[in-house]
Structure formats: C-alpha cells, structure tokens
Image (cartoon, rainbow, N blue to C red; front, side, top):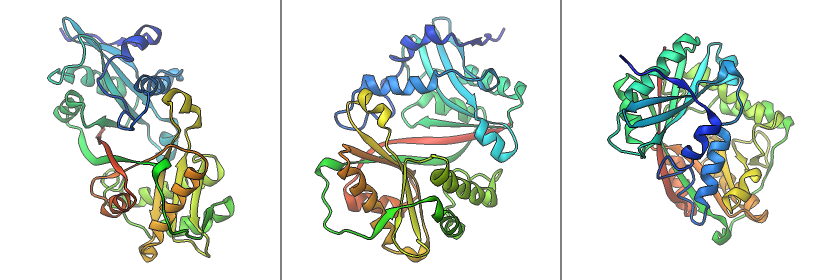
Length: 319
C-alpha cells in the first residue's frame, strides 16, 4: 500500500526544517549568518496561508525517513494567467538527514495528485542545483526542464567605478514608455518564453505587468533607468531591509533587467547606477540571478567583478 501524505504540522516541523539541508539560499555570500538565512527562508515558507492555497504536507520516503513537501498555489499568477498555478519550493528531510541518494518520487507523486485534486493546472518547481533527489524525482515524474539559472553577487563595500552615467529612479509616469520598450525585447531562455505552454505573447504581457507593478504597486523597491527621453533599459531591485538583521548583512537584489538592442553599453551604465545607488546607501552586497545562457547579463557581471554563487533549475508539469 502506498504511504499516505499527512498535512504538515508547521509548529512541529519548523525546528526540523531549520537543520534539514546542508545549504541555504544565500549561503554563498561571504559573512552571511547561515542560521539567519535559513530562518528567513522558513519564515517565508511556513507563513500562514489561506487553506485553498496551502499545498504543504509531510510524507514518509522510507521506514525511518520522512520529508516535508512545501508547495503553494499562487493567487497572483493564477489570476494573471487565468488558470491555477502552484509552485514547489522544496522537499526537506525531517528525519534521517539529507541523503543525496534518497528517493523523493513517492512524495512528489503525492504532490501532483494533491495538486490535481485542488484544480491546479500548472505546477512548477524551483530547485537548488545541489538538490539531487528532488531534481531526479521531478525528472522521473515527467517534469519539463525550462530554465537553468545562476546566482552571482558583488561585494559593494570594496567596489569602485570611475564612470558615472546619467541615470535616475523611474516613476509611475515612465510606465508607458518602459512597457513599450520592453515589448521590443526577446529573451527565449527565461522560463516563460522557454515554455511552449505559455509562449511569447503571454511572456510579453507578463513583463508589461511586472513593470507596471514595480512602479505603481511596490513590486520593487526601486527602478533605475537612463535619464533620457524614451529610456532603453531598466533594472528593478529589492533592498530586503527586513532581513538584514537575520542575515547580519544588508543585501540588495536586482530582480528585473530589460534592455533594448539599441542600448549597446547603456545597459552596463544602468546596472552600474543600481550598484552605485545601493553602495551609497551602505549596502554590503548586491545579488542577481540570470539564465546560464544569458551571455549579455553574465558579461556585465564579469565586467563589474561579480562572484559565482549557486545554480538552480526551473521545471514544470501541466496537469
């Protein structure tokens, strides 16, 4: 008889989760509190969810081993695409410790069955590249690999740049021109464009909404653009100020970067302006994530001296 999944008892599993994996999301940043980084991670993953969105449960994978499967339905994404979208955040061992040769397939099969019963149409997973059992199990169940990502980071306190460019913080008045510019940009390697189920038209619509939400709804903490008519680039960023105490460091993160082909070196100047903006405000580090195939963005990182952090995979299943 197949093992039965049980709803996660969050108060019970939290202390076990804090010690569950030999890594944490930002553990590549020198000087970060790994304990604090793990606490930040699980504050987010174990927050209170509406019951309709909660896809978290525990599941045995062996007589002496149990895992927590942490997933949730995403209301914003579901409303935007018009069908229910859910994300798997991770599979975390509760007993028996992390084993690279563990078999998570039964636990993740239970997730797909639960998602189907809940009416989820699109289930995607973001998996740390070190998490071999999760990647194997998703592959065995037929999930499609969409995107391979790399995180890099820049120590801002030691970074110096001689060139200053004319850039500024964008305002809601810039939405129309920035959206128009974004519709001329093609990136076949991000997970939305790379997925034939979603496709380019929906990806363009999503970028437009992200830009609007960043400038109007607080989706980002700031957006830097060239100080010129019809700017041809933008970079949004988050400051994560609420996490600085736990990390023991202030870490900014570039979220969305868009540059029209006509910009040439203008994208470089826009990234430099983000770095200077955060350095002047006392930030310790700046992080960004991009596709392993995005040569332009990776070249920009090398130019400024970014260091390698970690990799992750994005996979999905249409249910």
